[in-house]
Length: 253
Ligand SMILES: Nc1ncnc2c1ncn2[C@@H]1O[C@H](COP(=O)(O)OP(=O)(O)OP(=O)(O)O)[C@@H](O)[C@H]1O
Image 1 (tube, rainbow, N blue to C red):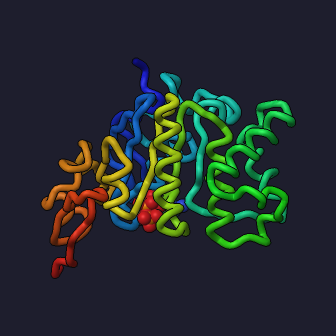
Image 2: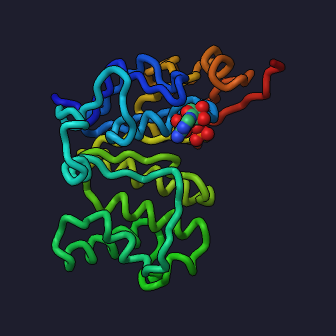
């Protein structure tokens, strides 16, 4: 089956410095793939490369088999919905209007209905008319998560979908992304919480200084060795009845 996303031997440089080197990644319909790594490892750059938002110095990025750089912005938006890391919103528009932007390609009544439905899924029922600048940071993050869901795209790319959310909402966000995978989407997300990543993902790609250190199911990808090399941590994932938990201390450098 053609993957929803395929990166093949991607190279990206910034200011003459390599930021991604020989990075390959595939995401199929139905899969949740996590991308983890230390600050500056290249996670956001990888997501942006997948969306055609950064120039590649080598390799290929394909959305549903088509080279991303051969697609118009609208064609890309039809293939992939994107939750960027920055939760910046400039205008105090009602939450439902912001969420409905995910379905900009649908008739207005449908986009509005999808927005109300998605806002209910993220726990914001009753807040649909509220201006987004009159919301808490976590509520705004939920509105943007709703905008991602509203798209009903074949590929969802979410940069830190759990950032700014309380513990219950973090688990809710990951459950919702899993529901999207179950309906047939491919989901690619970044997470700093490795316990959450192990819980939420079918496969985890560990980036270290722009290179792929591991690409495997969570238990294998987040081995003691990978935790030490990529995160400078001495520890392991422990598998509890409530899910995987990271138990680790910092290593001396
Ligand atoms: N516009 C830019 N110009 C120059 N360097 C950049 C630019 N954007 C990112 N970088 C550099 O590229 C590297 C990777 O950045 P990226 O944002 O992909 O990391 P990340 O893994 O998402 O980090 P974080 O966990 O901190 O969000 C970093 O060293 C960063 O400083």
